[in-house]
Length: 204
Ligand code: GAR
Image (tube, rainbow, N blue to C red; front, side, top):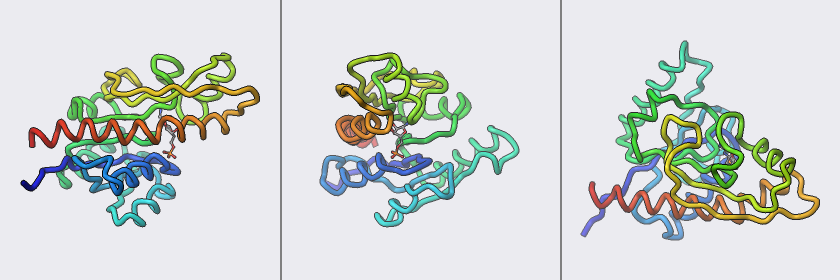
């Protein structure tokens, strides 16, 4: 029987190593109930767009500061998602805020990867390297990554998967960031995408 896969759009802003993990997981069959059909970048220079191109996935840039308001920006994004019949949105290092206007349109259809064990080191201001700086300066011995559904509360939606990563003596934020990506983010993000895609595909 021909399967209806969930149509996935990955939102990116930078290097796109999590996008790469998703592309690789699709190739290796870890993701089988979903298909990445679009990559949406908030930054025209994002290396993630190169990764999409290499994988033959359509890429589009929507830059917030080119719009008169947050509302206009979000409406443009919604228009693109509707045109492409997107079922699932994956925030993979997406650094632009999305308000309730956007998130309320996609309940349980937006997931995010956060580089800490929520509810630690999350919410407003905790993104990218800042998260690892905060974990090191607090002195925690274990950190990790979380994949969760996105709602109107920053990093506040239901948790899907988490994985812990040990902090080592002498870690810098950069070294820790890399370990959290390798040991946690690149593993649990594809798994969570498959879990949610399976659910969407079942009802499609
Ligand atoms: C990742 O570590 C991701 O968890 C983080 O940004 C990095 C993006 O890297 N996201 C956040 O901090 C969101 N709050 P990538 O572009 O190489 O995937």
